[in-house]
Amino acid sequence: MPNINARIEHIIEQVVRRNPGEWEFHQAVREVAGTLGPVLRKFPQYAEQKIIERICEPERQIIFRVCWQDDRGEVHINRGFRVQFNSALGPYKGGIRFHPSVYLGIVKFLGFEQIFKNAVTGMPIGGAKGGSDFDPKGKSDGEIMRFCQSFMTEMYRHVGEFTDVPAGDIGVGTREVGYLFGQYKRITNRYESGVLTGKSPHWGGALVRREATGYGVVYFVEEMLKARGESIEGKTCVVSGSGNVAIYAIEKLQALGAKVVACSDSNGFIHHPAGLNLETVKRLKEIERRRIRHYVEEHPDATYVDCGNIWTVPCQVALPCATQNELDEASARTLLENGCIAVAEGANMPSTPEAVRLFLDSGIAFGPGKAANAGGVATSALEMQQNASRDAWTFDFTERRLHEIMQSIHQDCYETAAAFGSPGNYVIGSNIVGFQRVAEAMLAFGVV
Ligand code: NAP
Image (cartoon, rainbow, N blue to C red; front, side):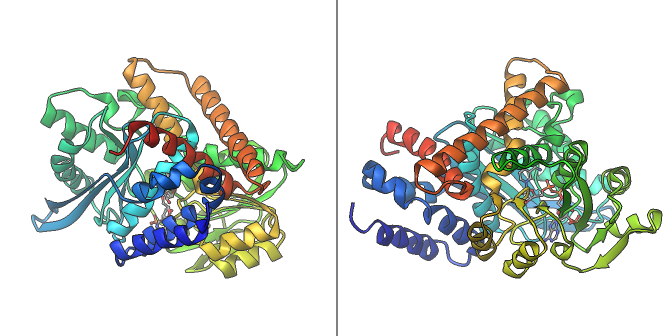
């Protein structure tokens, strides 16, 4: 088919024109669409049926008001979002983010990414994302609860185990999922376990869901290194963030014999050349909910760098696990100069396009988020399976499933990249695997 590149450029231009100001969404579309030329050449029916154009338009976007009262009785108004992007492969599935930076463009970029990531897992789940510009930092437990209840009071009418199954993301963990589920149950009078994932294992949650994204990233790195005759053991690693993904990536890296020397939060990073003490990080972050700088009070041989760039810490393996666009071109260059051999994205779109280009050109192992952090949503799908059959699997069994899924994601992306003439390029591999699975289902359903 002639002029495929021009056609893809035109699609991207249309997305930019129709979604003004949503530049993270533009970035995500450009990143995927830019790799699909070879697929459109090989399968012209995708272009004829305008599959990319259709995927770029969310099936449904919901924006709603969320009012709540703080502990002093003051009324606050936030904005809630749920973007149900694509349901070709199953019920919409994707997390909810509470962070002041959330607006429609962030939710759409995350929802768009989620379509392909979910498809890459091979599980029957569509793509969605939601959230609010609510800032949970510094809020009391009661305030968090009232906000979550107010959020669900609108969202309950749009979700359901066969419709849309939200989960956590930045600022939304087991506590928030608990409050959201409690309100859903109260309003609907249904104990519908499968309406949310990331629940506590005490009441319908899957064991390993908490660990899944972080463990999965490390399993993916393990596979990338194995393909190059290397292993994780003995490697020096840096992990950004100190939230859910980061903590369990650190845990698995340490279990596999790596040394993790730095992690961060949005205020700064800690560097502990002897290796991080994960118990301290977990207590500070999961229980006391304090800033990472307090780590050095208990470990005087570690240093804290306020507002610093964590990617200046030399390492062989780097895992960005905090947020989007946290690793730019200059940081990528620094990592490469310091001898980094593998980068895997625990966060969604943490590397800027320029950073990704540098990693790919350098030939290091680069695992994009759509493949590398898919273990979280894959385990959410395992949670849905357990809920549907009213079953509860053991930790070991569930972790084995997660491990197998990550291995098969790696293999699919690896083989697809090679089949489309870009061996070792997991960006191309994951985009094409995800796109083709969604595209085939959409073709089968006709023009809907
Ligand atoms: P989390 O538990 O809320 O932790 C987020 C971490 O990133 C915190 O340490 C936070 O620091 C830091 N952070 C957040 N925004 C930041 C910013 N603007 N600048 C610098 N640091 C920032 O969230 P999470 O679940 O670990 O999610 C982290 C990333 O992984 C996100 O991109 C998310 O979309 C992605 N992801 C998560 C899952 C999952 O299962 N949870 C699955 C796939 C992908 P502060 O505490 O200072 O804000």
